[in-house]
Image 1 (tube, helix red, strand yellow):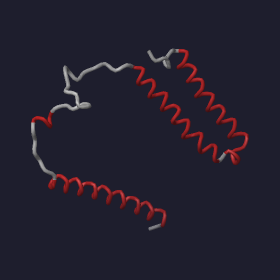
Image 2 (cartoon, helix red, strand yellow; image 1 turned 90 degrees about the horizontal axis):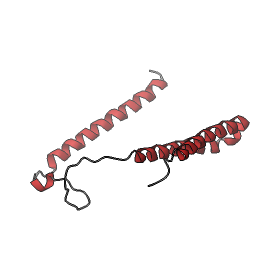
Image 3 (tube, one colour; image 1 turned 45 degrees about the vertical axis):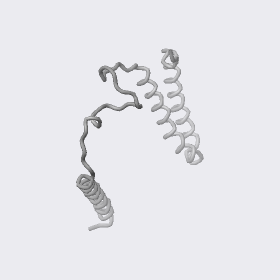
Image 4 (cartoon, one colour; image 1 turned 135 degrees about the vertical axis):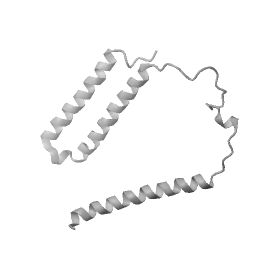
Length: 121
């Protein structure tokens, strides 16, 4: 067997070993843990306040949009930091590419601001 496939075999062995270890630990925990079911444990608990009414509520779309904007700039950071480390090697092409990338993200932010998404009411 070549060394190329041996390295994959090692990774596969560690994955299988990790999965077996997780299953064994879950089994040990299931056997050793105490089981004392009580009605109080079945109730919904939220910040120490007893729940009133149904559990259904409508969520505003703006929370989803804020999450998308966070994700947008989080992804930008994932691409910008490695670019900053390799900026000298990438030269002018790398500079132009990151400027286009950043301008595309700024365009998305400006669009969101014009749509009024960033206003908190």
